[in-house]
Image (cartoon, rainbow, N blue to C red; front, side, top):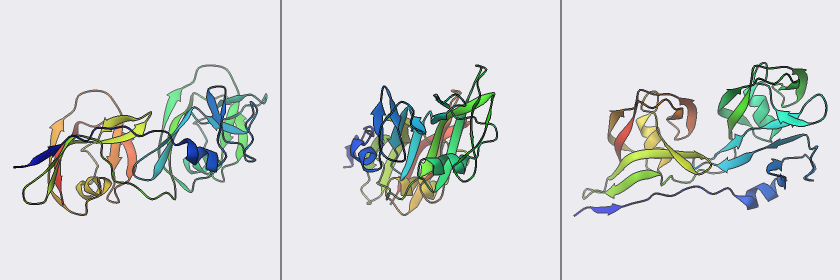
Length: 229
């Protein structure tokens, strides 16, 4: 008989990790000052930082001082995604999302070197950015259920990716690579996979062949199940 194991859980924000790289709490925000000292006027901070199972990190609402010295959102227009990740000490970007921005305010534009290049009054700002880290990935356990089959293979029902606030999201069938989804869960071989239709309007994770998130998209289908070995 198959042994059905429910493996639903959430990722927690690692305070030890943030302390190691100089992150500190600043009145509901977290400051990532270069010298490790927390302050209301640190150069760059963020709402939250989430460690993802694929080794990437999600920075929620990254911020930088505006032209009056006050922490504010980072302008989406003219900023370089790789540069925003470099601003926080990362080597590269996986993906990013923006929000509309209505206030009349001059915000920072970040160049490819991770440096301030100018101020502008943007129409959009960074909502989140997912950056590549040097941390080794750990096998994901986010799924509706994980079933060990009698032949040694593993059935993963509704595999999910956990990236914002510990809330798991479904994985987009469109543009994801089956082998990559298996690698996300710590397996090296894909046997078969099945999709199902998806109607909500939401951005979901796209998983590349390397088992890492490659982008976010609003898909027409998600993974119903995948069998890995």
